Length: 377
Image 1 (cartoon, rainbow, N blue to C red):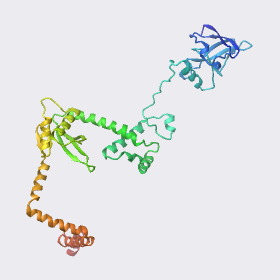
Image 2 (cartoon, rainbow, N blue to C red):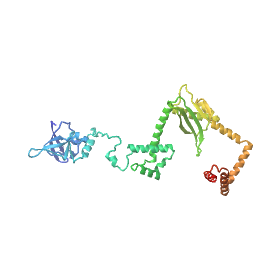
Image 3 (spheres, helix red, strand yellow):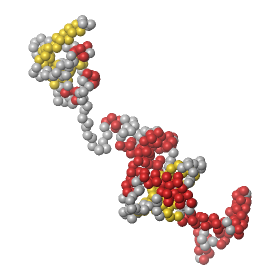
Image 4 (cartoon, helix red, strand yellow):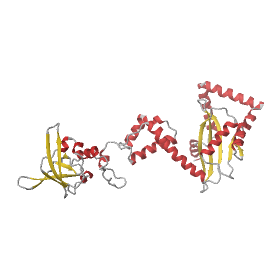
């Protein structure tokens, strides 16, 4: 510091004045912009000494210690105060405490960057604060991994979101990872599960995009709550000659199950999953209902394949409708109804069946084999 500046602070309200010579080469800020205690400097001649190299805080590039001469002319460094190099304000200082200086910069020099450069730690190493805290920070890799796995468990097993509030479920994780704090179910329903869904959807899109041919299967069904849905699945064969099946969507269809309405659902699905390709046909498998014929034709899917299982089911129903078979089924129903209503008859029937099986199938029962071997010996 080579330039000398004389700063005069005059406060009419407080009734005091002072004159200070500061040796510094920084642009001045009017003293009236600073608080009264920050403008108090007692010596006639003050120079600023830079902080030692061991002081690593970033605020020390803007502050220094005031230096003055005592009565004998000796150079003395004042370590209980610091001087701002930007506005020459005097800030009280205690050892290893830069809070006052930080507050001064944040209040009067907002454009100054005081953030310390982040120290890079080896991968997996925790800071001292993280190691001593009783719980894992939600942003830590370990907490994110556990939260992700819980979300995948909920999605795979279709578990309710309130399972994360179950007392035994929380107790299990306290044993497995005592530092982990279970997030609320709103966190899983609003962030974790939607994030997993978006990642999985993008992965399925990539798989369908690179497949040469795609086949769809669709069917409408009604839940126990009498809500109607349409489910669409896709089947592909990947490069490794492995068959993959994906449930693309299950959408509620509250309108009438006409062929036109179902066709609109199919078209929306093709657009959402980017399955529409020029000069490429997409086979669609449905049941034998007439509305499905119209839906497949209106949506432009080809060829339309009828479900073999549904055909067998229809044939079985017609076979059971024959009069002789119907009479036989009626007798079987009356017999089963009798045993279902009588616990005594059911117990007798089970006892008789066990005896009959033991008499006619003794060669199949392990105990009978041992007895037969003993007789032979």
